[in-house]
Image (cartoon, rainbow, N blue to C red; front, top):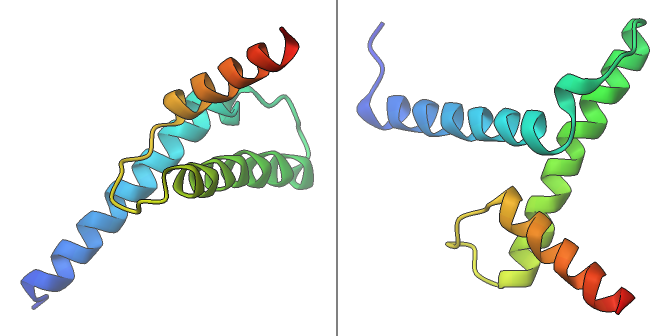
Length: 89
């Protein structure tokens, strides 16, 4: 299979992005905590969890206004929690 080095690099980069997306979905948005049994409910839970990570990443980009800043779900959660706490005080 004769793939060019650039194609292999793009595949590998995409694979890492998918791995980070799944890790953040499992750790921060409850992807592995669903208790649904039917296929439709499982699909909805999976899509909601992955969408939450995608929207969080979009919000983090809008906050930082720099595309080169690495995304951290934990930092975004901490920032939102601190803002919520300040709003309550």
